[in-house]
Length: 383
Ligand code: ARG
Image (cartoon, rainbow, N blue to C red; front, side, top):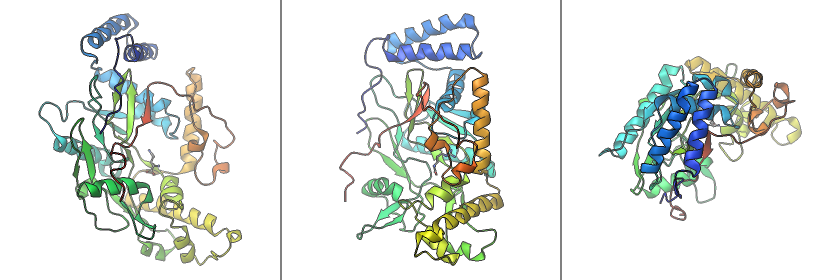
């Protein structure tokens, strides 16, 4: 389990030292480190790498580096706010006699802090990085809050089809859900070389929003809901030669992520037929554009419901306008703006937004947030 090869093999002139040096120079070039301190800091890091195979980043390196990692990420339309990212230093959590329960508590605290009573914060909690001889800390969940997906005998899924594999895996660990469409999965926490442990999240750490529609009273009866904000927990923060394998990142939602993807994709909750029937649309023929009309009303319902509940959310027009402003600001600063067009253009009304006509290069810069493989043992989850 968790036997990904270490990024630290080899002498200190190997990638960690080179990447660390790059980071220090970048922070200096952006005005975060006096030029006179650069060589000294690089010597320090080289020394630590030679002696121990790893080094400890300063609080400033961690915070400013994480912000740049976000800025470099090509998948995110919300990067306009990169300078507002807050980091929480959890590097000591779960070490020195600490265990999975301590890690779990810190993750719950992350959710409470990010929630912030509905004014969702841009928050990254950074736990201890992988070491020279060991793979890193992991949670098995792709997001800290996600709904279970129960595969039925006839091949259909109750809940979120996205999490079927994880749901199988946690059931093999002994977890039992209630079997509803919106069962919150437990967190599965794993330390290197240890067995994973799962923990149910306390209700107050899982704020959710019930979806209602501003004009259709029947909408509420569909029983749709979603968690208040996303917290990506399966990406590794690659920073200055270190790999932070547990670094959950919370932000607010754009309404299309929920309305035009999570609740509507045919391989997710697939609710458009239900919405269209409520609207009295003819779903027998594509040409009635029932999908398009239902998609729009579902997205409008999401925006309305989050607003009513006092939970931060943005619409895709605002999000893409901010993205263009970000892009322009980056160019003025002499930087490129790496972006993946298909991730930046919203899932509905793409052509009505400012990013549609633009072209982007998904250049891979360091530091960055990158996906990591699912940590559960392969083949151990088939049922
Ligand atoms: N699309 C993912 C979801 O629906 C979340 C990705 C990150 N989104 C964000 N607004 N930070 O849960």
